[in-house]
Amino acid sequence: MYKRKIKEDLDCGIVVAMKVFGGKWKPCIIDAISRGAKRPSELHREIAFTSPRVIDMQLSELMDFGVVTKQTAPGFPLYVEYSLTPLGKSIVPILKQLGEWGTKNKDFVKERAEWQSTESDQQPRRNMHQLLADPICQ
Amino acid sequence: MYKRKIKEDLDCGIVVAMKVFGGKWKPCIIDAISRGAKRPSELHREIAFTSPRVIDMQLSELMDFGVVTKQTAPGFPLYVEYSLTPLGKSIVPILKQLGEWGTKNKDFVKERAEWQSTESDQQPRRNMHQLLADPICQ
DNA sequence: TCGGATACCGAAAAATTATTCGGTATGGAT
DNA sequence: ATCCATACCGAATAATTTTTCGGTATCCGA
Image (cartoon, rainbow over all chains, first blue to last red; front, side, top):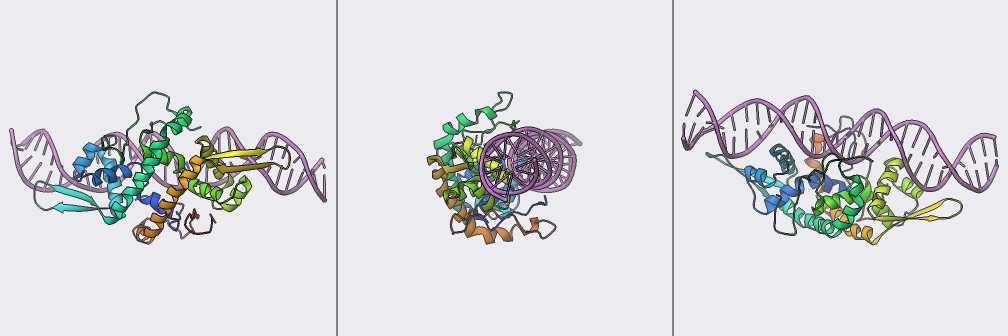
């Protein structure tokens, strides 16, 4: 568990929001679960642009903050399911709004960001928490 | 200029939004400008919880992305003013929504975050982009 | 001429976050 | 017995962001 050196201001709403769902893959995970991908292995398959470990970690943080809950079915085969709590569901429209803003302005932003590219012309790791369109992370 | 090694997915709206206004102090700056703090020295005074250099840097990124514009008055004394572009203004309601969500849930989040505190009981550097209430960063 | 206010910027260091690599454990199927 | 799928976790490393420290330059007023 990482111990931060500089305390964050949890009286600021924006800081709180960013802490809870601002991680690189958290919106993606929330999106995927809200669409019905509930089992860890499903999430790992859907969100193929990062490693399973990363998803596990961000998922456990989402649990810590009460965004998702975990149901473990007893017996075998191992069966675990995550789902959004009411708190988690309340995040979805916000992510949607963020996504809409970004989608609307992405071309404009892209233009102004090109100087900042990587050296090689590698492909990005797609995030695609496409809360607007159909396809999930993939 | 930092050259990133891993390309980001600028086709994802959320990634775009986070890139443009997701920095630690950017919401604070946008908020302050939207309230009328326009000169750099004003911003430095208002947002006293981080150093002037940090504000300058984040401000220049906001300029790069067309969120704010800079007007330089000729002659003396030196007079520079920043203001929000239409793009910048379109961010304000989103920050407001983020802030409202966080404010509503901050107590809940705080409880679940206490294990993660710093060793000493230092004060946080307040962000307080209080887009809800009156006080600006401070 | 010196000190202060203005506005800004480079670059090292520190802090934080993301990624990788490998490990644990369970039980079913071959 | 061995392999596979399930689900998870520790810890080192890499990547990125934030912070600090110092610097530039202009002109005014004392």
